[in-house]
Image (cartoon, rainbow, N blue to C red; front, side, top):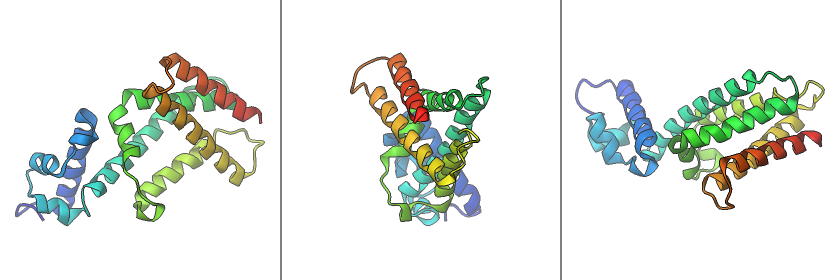
Length: 193
């Protein structure tokens, strides 16, 4: 449980905060049990007592990152002056790319761990589902099929994500402007159909 007198909830929050800071400043590879517990001033066993392991800590960090990323993306989409669906969705998709570039360590940590749906914590799943549902609110009011809108939102997110991944590691070459142009093309093509 950590040192005597340490509140388990406070220590849990501290461990998550420290892991977040390590990921932000040094990247996921530097976020080890030893690094986290040393900075938290607790024993290795404390992390094991409060979490099921380091992956559980990283999932807590990822839940925070998803929330922050969603807020960032929707602020950009809502700032879009144009009322056209394509403009709002393009702003959202470009904000995703900008977030990935500017907050690369946190963004990358979202995709390193592999879990099945059943292994993911409910809080993480809830945040992820809310992001997808929120994307559907940017579609036009005449698109009333909620199930189709959710599928379209997921498809758009997954396609934009692929462009961003390939663009950030330069697998297909090109500049940031090339990535942005491909995102614009993708969104406008999807909205036309």
